[in-house]
Figure 1 (tube, rainbow, N blue to C red):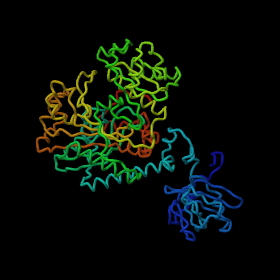
Figure 2: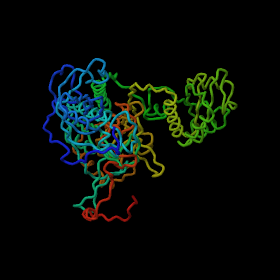
Figure 3: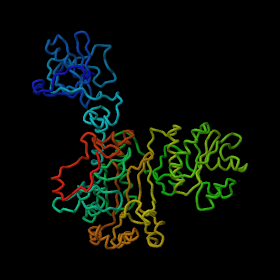
Figure 4: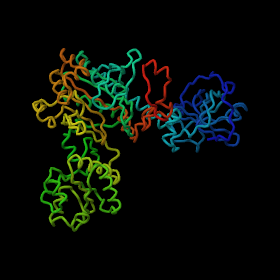
Length: 609
């Protein structure tokens, strides 16, 4: 790679050639069977090596890389052209395919048995010195990668990721079309229905003072399509949520949206299982055993402290609340006596942790809301550590039996509310699972989480809110409790989980206007407000709405999991940063006063840049 100190010709039209050579093969296509053929390659210069009168240039495109030889035997002008090439210059090269001499073949490259002896070169464009080498071998900051995303996307690993994403979409469409689904587009400019994450708002120029909202999901439109008789709908759709970002969140994202009529939970799940098995077979050659495991929400929270448990390793959480009521340790006893819980897990082999390492786990637990973290080391002779002196002689056996602990393990316990205990030990389980190398990275642990609560109480707003969304149907046997005990109502909802990540979620919907109004009222949405926000849906439910349900799977997350990547930004062509900005285009940006006037908007304050 050259440096900025080396002079390059200016990027002017007279420095480049018109394209008269037409590509005959890609840079990853040529093999020994092409020997003796005249070919034209077009692509980017990846490297240049001068070897005593011979110049070797690697030319690449998204299909691969081919070595081209510039020899004085083919003319001084050809050799001179090869000597002037620099990485990322765009070239078209005509030449003859020849076998590489013995001892020089590159078995790590598909084209490594041959090379092309150049006879003609056209420099189609010159490249400035890139801010980083366009290669998978170079480590560069994510900020630089996103600023120069057009170069980052030229790297082989990124091209592999984007192409696999295309193949996933193609495979999904192929499978669902064969299952009689119809792909239907729904609007991107719709009305705001603020019952969940924040909407992105779009001002209307023609109706000043009014706003569209970008869709968080096509939820209501796909339900309306069921009323319209399109009994099997799908869409690979762009959605938008104005929320805080993480490695697995983006303000704009893509989901596979599905809705079906005349179905129950098992029908939707069977369809998705078939799709998942088809995708993994076609893209990875991996057999997914069906049916997938089902686990109730309450069981997932009790055993793993999470509604999206990673089942690639054990380390389950044990409920010791009953034992704690007679414990000699007052903290445990008090928690159990006052409506709290005592939960514990065993970290295999972690008894070797130093006190400093255990203190770090305690700080982590407190950061999640726990009052503290009790710990014990399991030894052949019994238990030792922080609270051992408060326990009876026979407690060691009972705790080992409950947690499955063995000598050399570390017991960690939280005495608190059930929500805090689940959250804390669920986080510690994942943290220690990775730290202790317990996770089988090659495994695929799919499962359905079912029997979610329909509602949960929001203490800040002092009302019930929907756990999924307000259009989810309650289980028929729980309908009678909507007004009297809403927190105990179970939803006809289901989430698909893979390796500790929620791949998607769905439910059977409410298809009766009366039931939808009851759920709205339970959520604190009165009839007048419901009419203003959802009148079009309520009206549609009175015109022959069939029973229906569906699901949405996150395409970005699915591609990330298929590829084993850690960040969504590595599987999206032009992603945003954690602050929601685009370093490439510098969006979001200010707009001029004329645009604001046309939209009827006046800015009261402008945040500093």
